[in-house]
Image (tube, rainbow, N blue to C red; front, side, top):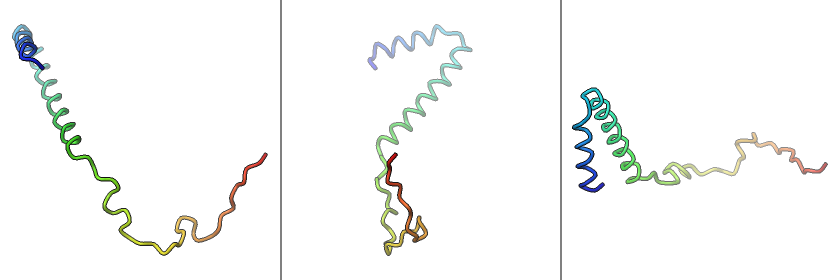
Length: 77
């Protein structure tokens, strides 16, 4: 934002009635918090894959199927 835009913002705030200033300040605080959290998430993206991936070696047993072979659909009409 340019210095000129900041000066205009200050001038506009000075012209507002107090009740509007309170709402504007609350909104400005919300924007600052949101932009701070966005910057924090941009600065430290999560590593992928997570460290626990591949932490335990398997023996090849198909756990999800209970070790039993499954019937497979072969398509057709």
